[in-house]
Each structure stands twice: as structure tokens, then as C-alpha cells.
Image: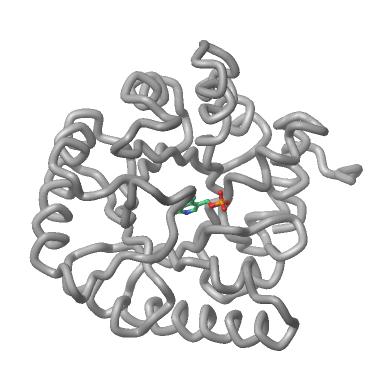
Length: 254
Ligand code: PXP
């Protein structure tokens, strides 16, 4: 699939076409490890292979219940990651304290419910302006870039700016789950309009959730898209072809 794309030529090609960057969420490597409560597979080793294959950042979510990624993983990732470490996190005080101590390059604030299988919706920024502003200020004071994971709604984008977040990540779940071509097109239009508005306000625009090898291209084409964060589909593909090939296949599509 990747014939003709050596590591260097792919890099040049990406810069030339100003393609979005690719952040890889490695939570599910830790999910597999936790299935046996052992030491393998190691998410840090996975992160290093992803970087070698050409990704632009490593993403992990330290959930309050520590169901996959543990504190020690984040500490090790902070030391090992050479690209950028993007820590997904809730605004729970203990998690915010931990992030301030570890200082990832970026913190992506997400809503978190214990019973959910994965992050379900975007942050209600408008409804939590004060709390989110305070957490954002604390993280930024530690030199951490702050991103809000939000639904592609104008009011949430404007509220993100009010809170001081310089970056938003548009939730692509509705797009990914759309059952018909018409619904998918509708969700893509919403994402495009949201991205355009956020860019006009000076926000950096990322996107993610539910993106896979068949649906990523249209989102990658959205004008001004800075980075796509993808986890489950790449780690799933890696089971069959290895992490390196799974990452490079996604990079080629983007
Ligand atoms: N972005 C955010 C904020 C997420 O919470 C997740 C899921 O952990 C992702 C991106 C990646 O989603 P997926 O695993 O469906 O690619």
C-alpha cells in the first residue's frame, strides 16, 4: 500500500500539501496489557514505533479510573516521547495536579463519565466557563498548550475562546456514526463550518474520534485542519499488519 513512500518522501509530501498532522492515541495498547494485568504490550514501546513511522504526536488519556493508561505510563511517555505528548484528561483536581507536575506538551480537556466505554460527547464549555477558565489558566501557567474537545457547535467554539483555550478538537463521532451518505455529508458540513469559524477566531483546529481508514479522507481535507487524533482504528489495524504499517497506511490516506 505504501510503495513509493520512503520515510523522507512521505514527510516531504505531507509538508508540501500541508496535510493535517497525525496524533496517535495509544490507550488501547494499555487496554490489551490490562486484560492480563501484566507488563505487555508496553504503550511506551508502541509510542516509539508510532513516532518512527512518522506520526506527529502521541496521545494518551489518563482516566480517573485508570482503566488503561496509568500514572507511571504518563511519566515514562513524558521522558520517551520525542514528538509531542498530548494528555487527554478531565478537570478532576487530582488529574489537573498530576498534569501540572508532568507537564505534557498539550492537555486536551475531555468530559469523563465512569460508566462510558469511550469519551461520549464534547465538553460543555458554555455551561462550565468558570471552572474551565481556571483549569486552563493553571495548565497554561505551566507551559502546557490547552485544547478543548468539543462538539462542532458555534457556541462551544466561542466559549472555548473565552476560556483561553488556544486549541479545539472537534468531536467527529457524529460524522463517524452517520448511517447514510446524506447524514455523513450533513455532519461533514457541520465540521467544515465549525472549523472555518474557529479558524476565523484564531483557534487551532484539530479533530478526532471514530476516524478510520475509510472515513478519514474527507475530514483530512477540511481547510486549515491542523491535526487528527486517532486511536482505535490504528491499534486495531496494527493487530494484523503491525503498528508501523498501520501508522504509515493512515499517513498515506491523510
Ligand atoms: N480524541 C479524543 C478527545 C478522544 O477522547 C479519543 C478517544 O480516546 C480520540 C480522539 C480517539 O478516538 P478513536 O479511538 O475513536 O480514534
